[in-house]
Length: 95
Length: 496
Image (cartoon, rainbow over all chains, first blue to last red; front, side, top):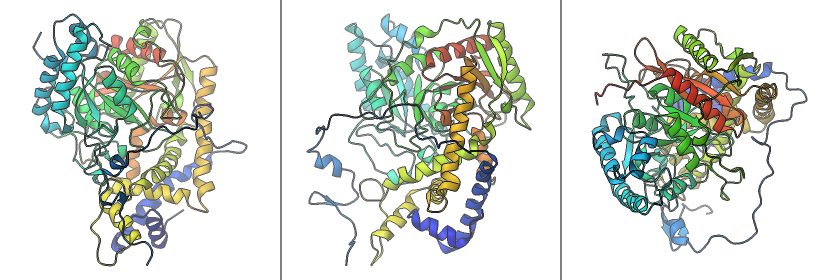
């Protein structure tokens, strides 16, 4: 499977990473090289094998449905690049 | 004993502290002097001398009061991937520039509760993605080892390259590392130290910046196997904040170091005999087999038939998980946000922030992960890789079911290479560094790298032992036997 420039542009957008038009051919080439390497997986007979979902057999733990944290607004906002009036601030989303 | 306290092992320092022969403040001062003199290695990237001295004084008070766990008063380096409260924790990425966590990771909490001292944060590959420590926003780490009189700077390996260099150069007594595909074991082998990746779930991942959640495990990087046993005991244990951490009691790992492995079966997987493997690595492996046999173990040839497919499966699964985990870096809640132009909306903010904040290798892996998870390719790549992963795990289960106690392999396909030597290579060529280690992460098993020899250029080489799940004690004991038999005592000649 080889990745063309349009696919590279689409993947970059899906990943929300800006890539200059001039850099797309090189990116497409690199991604194609990695995918070619992955294609070895097609040699493996995986009939009847379930995809692995849990590294070690374990029941996912549950905890009591109680509040364990809260009232830490200042801590949550402490690292924000832009916080105003107790909120995270971002550029206008809706016109 | 005030001479070269930074060169002590954890075990020796612990005994000296308990005997009152030395104080934690002495140890910490000696390490801070070595740390400052070691700036040329670029291992420590955020130093925390005030925290270290406060912790050392508190440790001395505890020791004086007779309340001294094994790690009490021991000066450590902490990989930048661990969130440490109020101290920069940026996973060696520009995108987390300025980030100071409001909380403490479970591993560092446990270490500090045990009285350990933090000297500072250690360099690494950006988001732990790399095998040479060349993708860091702080610049390369330099390996304290050199090829004889040749001054070419060498890689310490990665991603825990700062941890490995700091321990090998005696800037600290030990360090924390993390291992997603070999990031503890490969740098340990490149710098002549010990590094163990525990069983998946043994150590809490809470507060460790996530790369690939089903593969990541933290572990100790130390000067000896005994130190690894001591420090792992302080790091391990169930944690309500990590639902994948296991409710299994943590045994006394140090007590498992009996040196007796008579009658144990050591598997030698034929698939690890790679085409084009350097003769020195072959010879090292053969020596390791002979050492374990001399100690009374039985050497058994085994087959792990899906080994060849571990790297391609890893390079589907790890980027897929990374692409989801790293979606959180969006310039809203923490870290870097790009300067926006007139009329830029939220999509431009995301795209510019992530383009500026992530380095090339991280961007590449996020995009590969995005691609293999995208509609139409999910089954062909991601699900197929997870099925192959199940087969790789089954290979190990069958070997252990047949009575194998531990598996012996080389740790790396070569000794440390020069910084920049792989710059023009294909990304895939760099990925091959993890060829012997990545299977262990896919199968969730414990694995340890032990230094056992030097190559013709005078650089350290290591062997890897792989153990049964949850049997780190037995694994450490096998490693202890190997360490004792190999008698590796070489240290890098100080040039920095």
